Length: 96
Image (cartoon, rainbow, N blue to C red):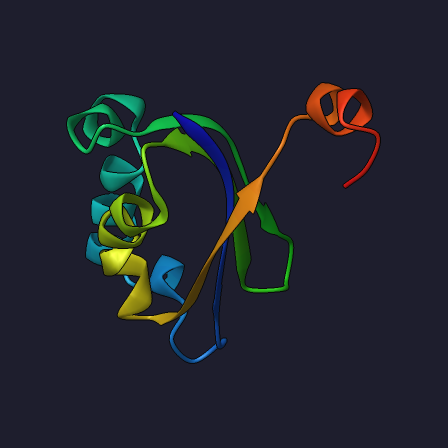
């Protein structure tokens, strides 16, 4: 498994939280049991207050798997999948 940070950004006009049905569907999609069905483990998530930006930290086999998992969010805005490392790993290899 590899570590990834995902950033999803959308405009105020396309904010999925404004649509109760869409919001509930996306919450269910981000549930740990649902993510596991995609072979993904979610370690953390957060939305920037007022910023319309969601960040996820997760484990997956490859970035394509993450992109597939994030497809519902891509309907509302951009999705960027970034390979990442734990701080311990960065220190052990002596650099980012």
